[in-house]
Amino acid sequence: MMLRPRAVPGCGLTLCLSVLLLAGSAAHARADREAANKLQQREASEAERSSFDAYYRALALSEAHGARPVAPLFAPAFDITRRSKQPWQVIARVDSAPRHSAVDLCRQIRSSFIYDASARTGTRWQPAAQPPTWHVWLARPNTICSAAPHTVLMAPALPPEDVVALLRQHAELLQRARLLLAGNSQCIRQRALPFTLAAIEPAAAADGATRMFALLFDSDRATRVRVAVRKHRGEYAAWNVSCD
Image (tube, rainbow, N blue to C red; front, side, top):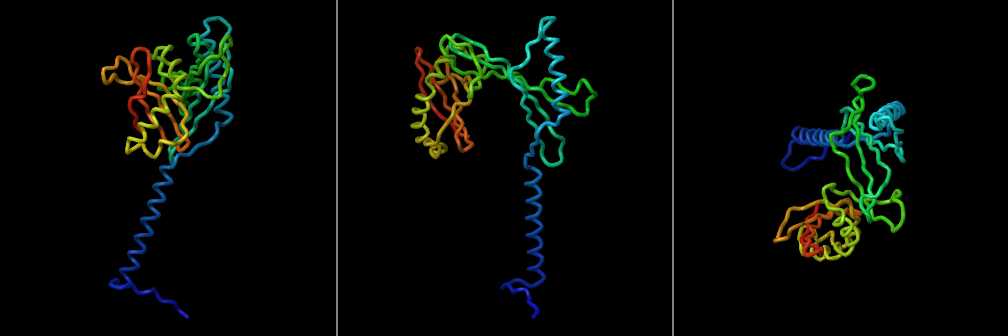
């Protein structure tokens, strides 16, 4: 028995088939666009790793000025991404050895390098446009700084004593910020989420405060909350919030 297309009221057979074909084409085009925009990732190749090792050894020798170069404590981390059929962007990141930035503050400096596969051999790696970043954590009393499981990104221009105070008080400041989240229609859904302190940045002065800071918290739902902190007479208070 031959099946005939079901008639749709107000729609001729030819017109309905055309509409269905157009809808299918639109769906395929949308899927192609989504695939093209999807971020692809891969591991570094052995050639890329060897090339970076040679480049970094030469860089360390040149910066040592005749002294024995200090090798990094950790292997470089590679971040390799692209969209669709675009060329791969290959970035290598190296952390310096942990050291005291202040009496109560440990620090590592993370440097980034970018790879150009089309350049001639020996010149394919260059420092990335992003300047080195500082990653800090509280030091333990009478203990040499060693690698920490969690670090906080710090703006280098911030006074170390303020960073130490904010690291010590960030949990209390987050609790105060949860009340502010509850009063913000854009943030109210995030008020009860678990958060981890990700960064400390300077913020523009406001409300007569001589100094303001921003604490950036990441949630377990891939969202971010920015808490503006006001410093007044040596005390810190969560002032307002914004959400991403």
